[in-house]
Image (cartoon, rainbow, N blue to C red; front, side, top):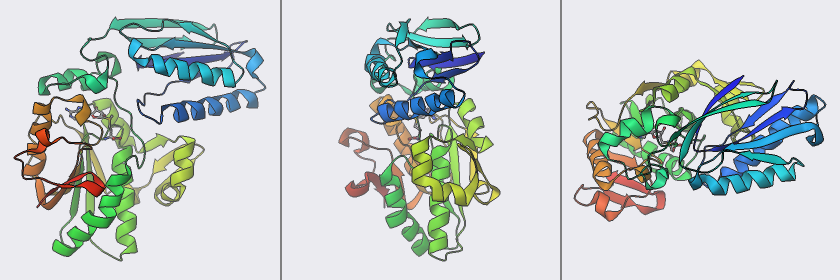
Length: 345
Ligand SMILES: C[S@@+](CC[C@H](N)C(=O)[O-])C[C@H]1O[C@@H](n2cnc3c(N)ncnc32)[C@H](O)[C@@H]1O
């Protein structure tokens, strides 16, 4: 029996006609990676079926769930199933619903529990959350609120370019004897935090530097923080291909899984933290708050930025993705446009 909290995402359920093998595909990404990720997962799952002697003609397929806001995803998934030679039934799609799905491939039963989503939150990118909304929206798991936990290894190139070109050099020049502190402030399952740690470790090694560093990963959602603490990730194939040298250097690869080793784990630490609280005084050289601002009101964004500047070292580098002039006015932050970074001088 598979139990999934799929939020507003459509999922593909697959089973061999005798019920001996089942598969589920659910991609939470809302960005341009969506189709690529879904295709990749689909071909991976179909390979598993093929390895056990099942071809598309004797695999049953259904697309379940998917809110009105995710119609475009349903269309993509339908195409992907067709390309694989599958014909998918569509069940309980559309509407303003969050769903939990229990799927038993043995008898093909899919029990769907759904609750009406808050219309203000149904499109997370337009949620415009206040500080008070944040706990409800993000911490209660996907069914309770906005479905927005998507993350990936080395997701935003700007962050790593800035680390290599600006942040590490500035730290080594100003305070080489001090530990370089980085805050990955809404780290989801920690892929971002490990990416930062692997990148910094390798770069310091290349530079022959003995400077110590720590990357602190925090998130409002305790389930994600627990996942991050485990240090074990199931890798999607494109990440494995792109970042293999990092994974081989800093962990044990086991099939499609990576288990991070002590050499990198001692440079990361994780805890639950809601950005609506004031952080404890700490001197961070860099703070990353990626793919979060779009969900919040301008007032909340300014509050986050005020806190970030209060706990930054100078020069301090703050990454929040796009920040409008309205958000940063009066905060004494300078734009480093080439890196989409904010600088506290
Ligand atoms: C879309 S994910 C981005 C993860 C990662 N930063 C990245 O870019 O890959 C957004 C994350 O922000 C977290 N989050 C949202 N509001 C938060 C808050 N008030 N405090 C801490 N984390 C929050 C969510 O739980 C989620 O894991």
